[in-house]
Length: 282
Figure 1 (cartoon, rainbow, N blue to C red):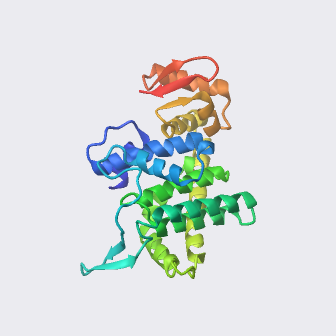
Figure 2: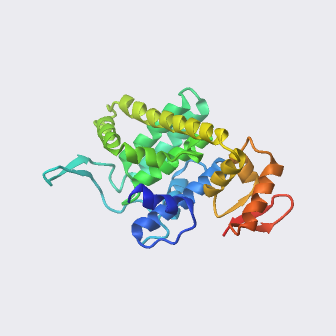
């Protein structure tokens, strides 16, 4: 699905017309929850199952369950032939591998002996090599990446789509993933190329964010533009506190003025006022 069709699905309240659109809308909904409540997500198999289930809940695909059959990662060559690129963990072993992965990740995260950016992307590579679902492994890995970056206090995924940046470099992504996963089952894989690619995506996101912020600051009504853009990436219902965390450089009185303006335009409605006021997109 091209970017022009993805944008309205990712940013607005839209009814999906088919399975691919339903997957995108589900992805958008989970992403909004991650942006708003990332601190409440624990890294456990149950969390990963819930992310997958919520992402695919609008589709007829198996959602929120581990794969029931062994799967392979295949690649179609220019001449039309299919080749097996990687054989993931078997369906029978998947629950055990996910439990071990989460336990080891959480232990290393708390020990802080390994840089958290390196640990995050090592976790994602292992997740992709386990390939625990019949469908949706790639999208879940991107959601987990954004979640873990938030928890490590790297918030650029709130403003710049990492999914888009990976899609724009998908040939490199698959080449690096294949290279880094070689000999993974034996524990002899080389992860350096995966780290280089993943950190390169993160750097590209920050550069794009800096360019966007510079453009906004140079224009009139910069804070209004900032708040309106932030609202597009929040869930359908959100609080003033959620919005304030996304726009840390904008005062709460200014945020309330902008919210009232959007309500007058018919784009928002207030659910209740006072402390912890809630708003809903219309």
